Length: 140
Image (cartoon, rainbow, N blue to C red; front, side):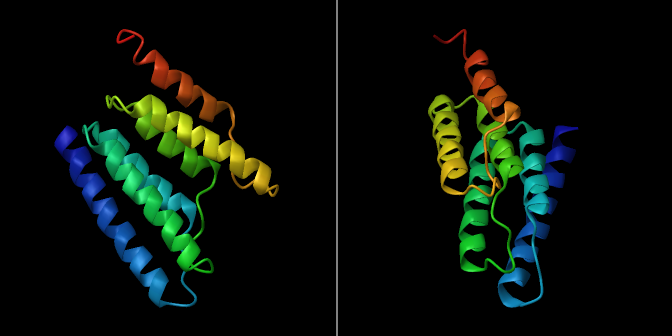
């Protein structure tokens, strides 16, 4: 089953990469955050040790592309950030607690600087932070 999840993640990554490339070239082509969120989620479901780094790469690419092509690529929303948090909170990386703290701090900052509410921490965001620490309770 895990190999199937890995293959699915690789395929979704190829599709997303192609869509982002098309969005950078075509004026009336739009990549929404849902597409990116699905791709990030497929990597999380693989359970691979480097899934959080793969999700990080996708998330960072979304940020770059949405700034470079704002008319064609949606910026991350709360669900995007929560998916990004989920990747790190379920990671075995020693850096995971700091990463989730940094992500939640960024979300809090964005909620104050962008009052439109596109990005704001919600229950799920804080759940992921707590889950990250709970997953490591035996290490401290």
